[in-house]
Amino acid sequence: MLKQLFDKKEKKVEYIELIYDLIFVYIIGRNNSLLHITENGFVNGSAFLAYVLCTLAVIQIWNYTTFYINMFGRKSVRDHIFLFVNMYLMYFIGQSVQKDFENYVTQFHIAWGLILVNIGLQYLLEIRNHKADVWNKDICKRMLIPLFFEAALVFISGFTEKTAGVIISAVAILSGIVLTMLGRRKSPGGQIDFAHLTERAMLYVVFTFGEMIIAIASYFSGDGSWDTSTLYFSLMAFLIVVGLFLIYGYVYDNLIDREGSYDGMVYMMIHIFIVFALNNITASLEFMREEEIDLFPKMLFMIGSLIIYFTFVFLLKGHTKCNCKPTGKFMTTICISTLLFIALMILFRELMAVNILISAIYVFSVFLVIYGFYRKTTEVNNE
Image (cartoon, rainbow, N blue to C red; front, side, top):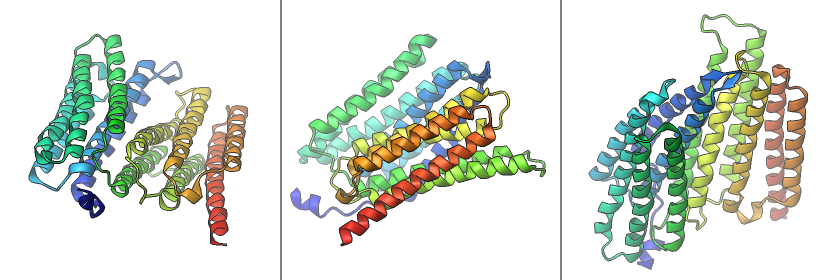
C-alpha cells in the first residue's frame, strides 16, 4: 500500500475535464444575467439571492466532480459516461437561470439534485474497486453522506414554497461543505494529487477571467462607433482584469507549494469564493456605465467584490511555500492600501470615472506589494 502511494504518478489534466469546464463558462454568463434585474436603482433582492445560491451551487458541483476525478478518475468509459451525463444536466441548470427564474426553480433543483446523485453513484460504484483498500473504501463511504444528503435537501427545496425553498437550498450548500470537510478529516483515505488539484482550480479561474474579458465588450455599442468615454472605461476595466489575473497567476506560479502534502479540501473551498468574487467583479465592471444602477450601490459592489477576492487569495497562505508565508508587515501594508482604497472610493462615489481609476490603481498596488515581497524573500533566501 505505502509503495503504491509513494510511486503514484502525478495526474495530468485530461481534455474531457477542459471540455467539462467550458459548460461552466456558459453557466457563469447565465448566472450573471440575474444581476441585471434591477429595482430602485440596484439589483432586485430576490434576483441577487438567486444569483448567490445558483453561483455557489454550480461551483460546488464543479468542486465535487474535480475531487472525484482527482482521487479515482482513470479515463474509463464509465467515468466519461457519468461526466457527459452531468454536462447534459448542466444545460437544464443554465436554461433555468433567467429573468423569470421563479418559473424554473423546480427544473433547476431537479437537475442540481440529479447531478449530485450522479456523482454519489460514482463513489458507490468505486467501493467495489477498493474492497481490500480500507483507506479509499472509507473515503468513498464518507463522500456518500454529504452528496446524497445534500441531494435530498435539493429535491425537497425544488418543491417547496419560495422562502422556505431558499432557506433549504442554502442549508443544502452549507451542509455539503461542512459534511465533506468533516468526512475528509476523519478519514485517512483518498490520497490527493495536490498538483493536479491546483492545476484544475487554476484552469477554472482562468476560464472565469475569460468571461470577464468578454463582459468588457458590453462597453462598446456594437455599431462600430466609440467615444473617449468608451475608450477610457474599457481600458480601465481591462487593466483591472489584467491586474487581478497577474495577482492570481503570480501567487499560483511562485508562492503555492504544489508539491506539498495537503488534502486539498480547504484549497478548493477557498477557490469557491475566489471564483464567486470574480463573478461579482465582472458584474461590477458591467455596472460602471449602466445609468439605471445608482452610484452608491455601484461603488459598494465594486469595493465588496475586490475585498472578497483579495481576502480569499490571501487565505491561500496555508498552502504557500515555507519561505513565502506572508509576514505581519506584508499584511499591514495590504490592509492600509485597502483602507485607503475604500476611503477614496467613498470620497469620489459620484464620479464613476474616478472610481474605476482608483480600482485599477488599487489592484496594481496589491500586485506590486506581492511581487516586491516575493522578490525580497527570494533574495534573502539566496544569500
